[in-house]
Length: 330
Figure 1 (cartoon, rainbow, N blue to C red):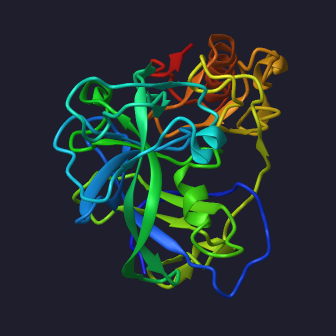
Figure 2: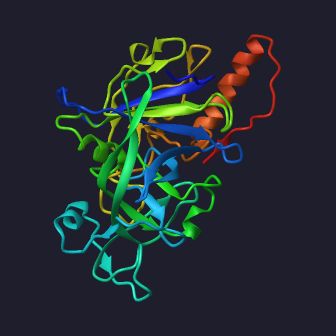
């Protein structure tokens, strides 16, 4: 069982199909970085297997790893631009590397745009395949590592790591995309659902409040003292943003997760605001996004103003003292 001191549990159904007796469930540990308040997911990559720490990004499409610095593995493969997998990735770009051949450097390669959604930076990197291993689970405890051949990811570079927690070497993509981490793990078992749940710790790394991610299972998710968190969840539909991805130059729909917020209340009283700001417009802006790349809530200036005014009014009616608002508006 897992023992987070204080945490947030989010479960996401990417699609639903029937369960199979051969279904394999996985888990990976999650920690919170003290300096950035961002989350790190840990798994094993390469041959021989090496512990790899990656920034957990709910909205990213494809996992990427810094291939330019100390990437050593006997099992990595480059992906050619004319292979079926590259066509299925639909990246639309390919290229050549004229430096010394090695990880992230080959000719006629399938390429991608790895992204850092914290700094809103992107680069061009070659697609690679390598061995991955994650722990299996029965929902109570981690079991042994299960190796997975030919995990698909993109190469990034050291500069792209800026703004991410110290010690990470890339980004773990959990977004709505056929080759994100949850989707690739779902393909390791017949009839496994592409479902994952993340328990995000509120305390920082090195404490007893570490979190965990479950993959391929709707539960149980046992936490100490013997509580199955899957029985306590509240559900809301996910909304697709069809117009705008995290990398604007892509023509693909967004891989991020949105929810349908219809109203905001303070002290159980509705806040008067422009409700169109709560919806995704034709250009892909607006709506309410669940993100792990911003460690605090960000709202439109008009929404923040309306909420602040309502909060101050309600606070005065309850004889509470108003303080300066630490929030950020966009």
